[in-house]
Image (cartoon, rainbow, N blue to C red; front, top):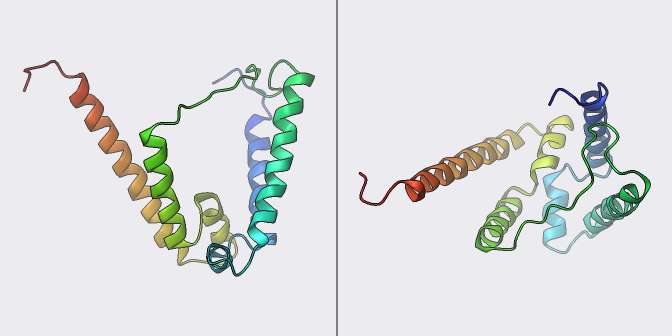
Length: 152
C-alpha cells in the first residue's frame, strides 16, 4: 500500500526490536523456560503474557475512542472476527503440539536466535515447511472444490 505514512515501516521495525528485547529480557526466548511452564514448574510465562494482554487490551479499548482511524495507515478501526470452526480448532491444536514439542512459539523463536540459540533453526525450518505444506494443501483443496463437476 503506497499511501501509508513514511514512518510506518521504521516504527514496525522498532516495535519488533522492543518485542524481541522484551522476550529476551524476560527469558521467554529460551525453550527451557517455556517447557518448564508447560510442566507447571515455572509460572513466570503467564505474568509476561498477561502483562502484554493488559497493554494490548487497553490500546484496543481506548484507541478507537480517541481516533477514528489508525494514525500511520489511515485504516478505520474495526473488528474482524473469524468464525470459530473446525479449522480454528484443528490449527490451534497443531500449533499447541508444535509449541509443546519445540518449547517455543514463532515470535519467540526469532528472538531466541538473538540470544544465541542456533539450534532453534530446526524449529524455524519446521515452521516454514509446515506453513508451506498447509498453504499447498489449502490451495490444492480449494482448486479441487472449485473445479466443475465431471471435469478431469
